[in-house]
Image 1: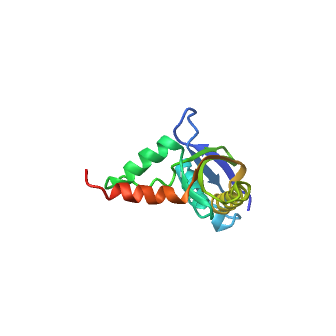
Image 2 (image 1 turned 90 degrees about the horizontal axis):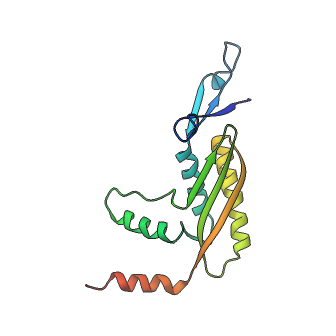
Image 3 (image 1 turned 180 degrees about the vertical axis):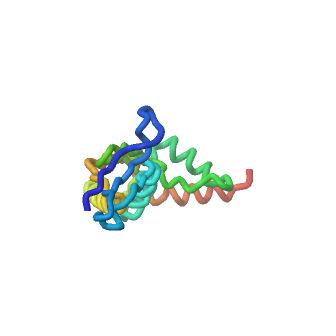
Length: 160
C-alpha cells in the first residue's frame, strides 16, 4: 500500500496542522486504500507524550514553568491531564519531528533513557500514523530526587 501524506488545516501556512493520508482511488484499488485519512498535529503530540511516559526512568515532562502550570491545571476540574505537556511536534507531508522536555529519575543512565525514549516514540508514531519520524530531540530539564516527593507530600498536608 502506498499512501501519500499531505498536510491540511490551520497554522502559519494554510496547509499545516493536520496530516492527510491519501489512498488510491478507483474500482481496482483495494477497499482499505480508497479515501483519505487526516491526522491532527495534536494526535501526533499525544502519541509521542504517551510513548515517552511509558519509558522507565522518565519522571515527568515539561520545562520548569510548564510543569508548574500543568500541576495547577490538573488540580482544576476539567483542566486536563497534560499528555502533551513537554511535547512539540512538526508534521510535514510524510515526515514528523518531535521535541521533548523531560525530567528523569535520579540514578538512571540519561543516555540509556534517551535512547529508549527515541526508540519507543519512533516505533509508536510510525506504527500508528504511518509518518516517518526524522528526529526526536530530547532536552533533559531536571533530575527528580527521591526526597523531593516526600517534601512535596509534607507541604500539601499543612494547614495554612
